Amino acid sequence: MVWTATAGAALAPVVPVAGFNGRAPGSGQPSARRSSASSSSTAQRNAREILITFEDGDEPCHFPETVALRDRYAPLGVVFPGPGDSGGGAILGDCSKFGVEGYGGYRFLAFNAAARLADGGVPKGPEVLSFSWPVQSVEVLTGSPAQGSVTLSCLDGDGAPAGSATIGLGKALQPLSVSGQDIASCQIDFDAAALVLDNPRFTPQDALPIPAQTSPGTGLLILLLALAGVLRLGKP
Image (tube, rainbow, N blue to C red; front, side):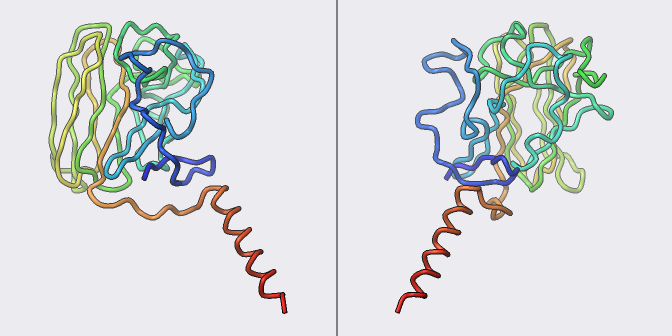
């Protein structure tokens, strides 16, 4: 079963995208631009894992045309608070020419402390991933056109360390991951002037809760079945 966010901001089951792995076919990076992305490629869940690919809309090329990511993926169980009221990473398209390679699709989460966002916020770190339920593993792809290092530090629900990892940054995105018990949040710190993150994925500690709402298609099906039952009952 694959899970994704619907227009009503609820978790709903969808059909998996055949052969989708978050990358352009036959390549480790984009080869052509898409005008839009299907919601099923935006956030996928297999039997144990949720993957967010940032491919759910047409994103701008420049920071002043957008705002920080924040709570866009809250229906999937994670928010991305950054520093201050409006700071943090923003989703950009690959037209931003960020100077990195190996990202999953055509969009990524970008940081640059020298830039400004549309609302005056600064797209800088540290960035936090705060989960709605405990998770047991977290991974992101990360890279930078500048030299430096990046650290992923995770805490459990009591604020105790649940694991950390550090890698050196390069133009080719690399996986950065932490595994632990009852992870409630993770913070991403980096010392480079700019950073790109892509394909954050996390594994819930337990089974996901039952969706609070059904998708519009499911609701229509239920209504039609109910009407059919009423008509049948009215027959002699």
